[in-house]
Image (cartoon, rainbow, N blue to C red; front, side, top):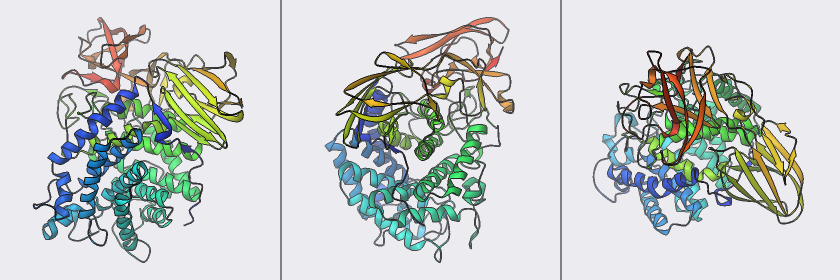
Length: 629
């Protein structure tokens, strides 16, 4: 395999080159850093996840505790903590991580193997692990765990310059490279993730062996080279370049699609690029919840059939939402098309953000679009977020994304600067010999007015690419899966130094190309109308129903605000709805208020809150989709 030196044609801005300072995201990022990361480490200690490394390293006695894939949770929190160190120095956190890394190094066997469930328990290993190394890869997460370790090790190396953890990861990857490949062991991980991690190692080292190994694991899927296939739930039913429908476990799938996109970028392989684009079309056209969640089915935490998008019984795991964000970011970096960021944004503000409570210490594993107080959507009939789970992939995953969110706001290619997300803050670029600073001022997502003050160190010609979200172009998504009842929309407006300019729309971006001098003010005004959404007629569970959106936010009705049973409410097409800012509600939100009809046809006033904020005010009922009156 030939690896090109160019990688993705578009590159995101580094975490250290941008800061988010707005009232929406900044408190959430700070809470993730100051509350959720310490809390997750505390829970990893309480549940024996960290002790397992000490036991494997001979630093303490005792059996392995917990599930065989628990190593991955610790690695994910370490990655989040490394991203936190990019945001600001924290000597206490760094010292804690160094102690953990010493444990990881002690737990690693002499040849590089690292899997505490086998090392600790030896001959009495859990049956899921298999009797010997690599003997039950369809189930045991042996390769999945270390994929997260590779990502964490690279993040820590980039944050601190310290190599110890990276060397642990490289030693393990070198072992796996010596075991797997053509003419060696031909098998694949049941749960994908190592592919992403191997590409991260390549970026840190430039060693082509790592993406070659990632491509080997991908190329072997769906090919019975001396083994039994693991089937559709593991996306191991067809060669990956032949897959056109998203099937099986949604987290596994989206991690795999992200890894495939990495390989498409690194190799220029057209078959890989065609496959991931076709899979995206299937997801966004037929299998995406309005909130951006994926994996609608409880059975297997999986994608369902085309247009199988239930309301009450929707699964939409938080980890799957995060994986969907990672995949869409990569597709944008590969193509420069805004439609991928449209899906990323929808998922970020809705299907992902609902997974973590405002206290930073409670979580949703599952994110349905309705709750009746009875269906056990989160392994409980309670609406309340849970403090932890036996399988706590979601509580440990969210801290990987939030501290790194600033790297999703801007990107650049040659002489183009992309503004993908709208969040107040500051960013710095270098275009050839010109230093560029962009200060973004906005109250998005509550308000559609965005001001960008762009300052250059010397006159320079380049383009500012401003994403015009699909909602500002009269569509919820870049597909026909959902549509607005009223297809008309006020246009987005761009003003440069007080002068309105035409809105040239290329691949979802308004391109402002000019010779920039000194300081220039660019104002973007996005329409923030309240929109009624209906689903494609083929979505049986949503026929005759309507949902509400404003800007990037999907709205929900909860019992806490509405005396009537929200599941029985109907919303007439002609009912007036207004937006109302409520600074003292749920951390400060804009609610939607209007009149609906209860189950008896009586007019009642309703209040809708952003979907991400539901489940904070006791048990009750909730719904995104209302009966259409």
